[in-house]
Amino acid sequence: MLDATDTRLLSALQKDAHLTAHQLGELLNLSASQAGRRRQRLEAEGYITGYAARLDPVKLGLQVQGFIQVHLGTHGPEQSASFARMVNTRPEISSAWTMTGEADYLLHVYCDDLSALNSLLHEVILPHPAVARVQSQIVMDQLKRDAPLPT
Image (cartoon, rainbow, N blue to C red):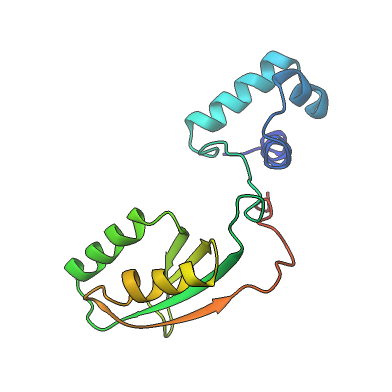
């Protein structure tokens, strides 16, 4: 069970995962050791699943960001597992979701350029035996970055 202090701690860490126990303690009106123990408990209980750096895709040469809706032609455990294995081998696919509605999957992709996106679509995703069709959307501008979860 989370209390108000845990919620404030999680919120602070989502904004800056580099906060030290001392800094967290000051924000939460706790001692550094209390703040550190709370963070460790939240990590151990799975509320905090990891820490990562956010990178600028454009500075890395990833000029094209897009979403690909994937529609399977056949639905079964083997097809789903095979598709999931393919998705997990492709570094261009930054995240993937199974969906309700018309599309079976939604893929978030980053590619060097349009040619790389075209290759991903026509040489990797469409040839997969379970895939019937895809629909892609290219991101023109991102209005809001991945924001912290509401706490």
